[in-house]
Length: 320
Figure: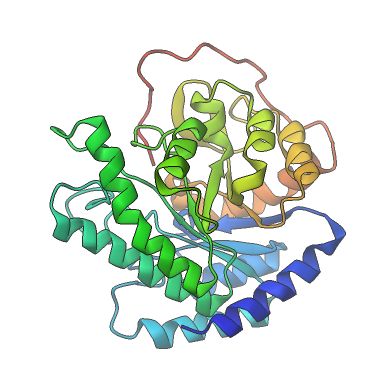
């Protein structure tokens, strides 16, 4: 781990952010058919400010024997291209080829929880070397047969040493509320904060689509409410009550309002496009997304559906 390099690159990013403009990135989980070097070249060529780098077997494999050497190569490449980075840990099958997002920090087996915690500490080491803004993570779904109180305390206990490791590395850990998971809402994030004693290195990943999907507040209000803890932002279109990541213009979100709220809060991390189910046409959606976001950030009229339906009892669609 090289905290000095992390702090140096983070300082450079802060200086570039001094103008107050939002910086946009694209998630590599939406570019899985490209080699990582090709994906980074594409994003730099299109004019993105950074990348949401998901640690996965097809890009930067967190379980590979040569992870440290490969991470140094990626750091040099990011620097050469002028790309900032946030490290994401949402790979579906990186730890278990048969269980999506398994094992998690909620798994009944302590050895399985330790495997997930190990992945997160590896991600923190990678993030420190890359000078990343934060490491993204999530709770996972509550296992069958585990009561809610046990799940929450298991999650907090498993996350505490990871947070201590993040604090030593100088890299915030940004937990994402995910529909269908134990920690699904902003309210759940604050419950976790309370259980852990509000540690300084516990931050929040806010997915704008998830706000539209299930939060009681409109997404722009969610941004304002989340501002003190915001360390990473994911963005895509979405409809009310349906957890389906959509290209911009195909859902219900008022993006000029959301981006105005983000800018007003002083958020200086990356706002990363999250379209993993559109990876089959990743270069197309990467090219199309950035102009949309720039128009929306400038206050231009962007095409949205505008309708907001009621949230049904059960969420439709399948989670990422």
